[in-house]
Length: 453
Image 1 (spheres, rainbow, N blue to C red):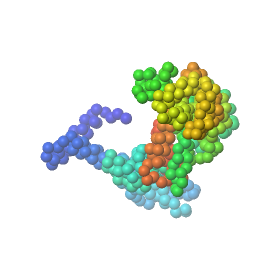
Image 2 (image 1 turned 135 degrees about the vertical axis):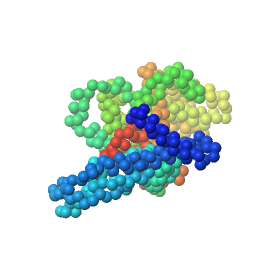
Image 3 (image 1 turned 45 degrees about the vertical axis):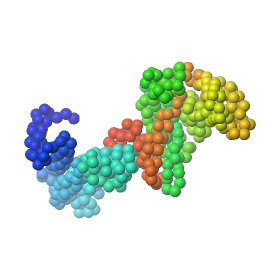
Image 4 (image 1 turned 60 degrees about the vertical axis):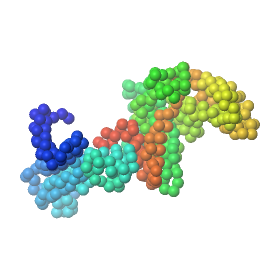
């Protein structure tokens, strides 16, 4: 929203005059003193303007009666004061109050019309509290809001609003699930679809969250597209991994998460995929580690998808074998590791299995070798890296691993954190929505809550 030059100039002159008067009391003011005074002034003016504007929206001549939901007529009594906690702090206003003589219910038409919730935070402030709550602990979020907005809220208020946003996201996901399982909607969608994704990526992983006295796995998934990156844009420490194929990076990432068993998480996988056109895509590519539950879900919901085991997980097994078998001789260890990794990179799995098999009975390296053999055997078709590179596929699952770190490690596993199941679930969903740039949609839904009530 832009304001007229004349309006800005008038307000500017008034504020500068007041600022100069206030600064006379501060010997040798610095820029930070001036900034602080301006912020306080804007906050106070905002509260006064919001109070005056909201009050002015109520008719100066209230109707004597209005319809009541019970079927009767509610009668005007008097103007009653209400208070809201807004981004400008507490704001008071007055509006007409009606009471029905039949059901004795009270009504505030202005509150219903503007979506006001007396005694509660406004939708605008709720959105900012939610952002604070997904970015840091609720206690620190409270302190940050106070520092930024001069609005004091308890950590419980930050928790409540953050988790409200998570519950709104959960409700959206339930709608997506119901829609994705509606056969008629599915047929109509496929009949009328015009824009079909060419190549859509998906990844799934999990990380553990402290829930009560135990640790529970929060499953995290994401959908994304990929774009090429030149070697010059790749950090120096990763250039040796890029090799001749160049590099790809994810873009337009959409995260989702839940504390669910794998089977139930599958419904969310399918629903979020359908929302982004995975069921319509010319090609769906899944990149993940070798966890059996992941590939079971992928095979069930997207049986035609290309399945790729994350390269960095795959090479880790060889590094372990090399360390256990030849850790005493660095030169031999590096030579063996590079030779077998080259075979893996080229998709020559038989050669990889043979190399690991040579250490299967070794007293120290045997277990690592047998685990590697099992891993490569079970995921053979997902390790065809030569073909994957030829097709231009992204072969690393760093996108979902980043999601696990951002949603679980950085937020839910903060030092001292202990969650209820619903609290962890809601906060995780809220943070996933924030990371997926879906916050504006949730803010709009938050603003509709009081109107719906």
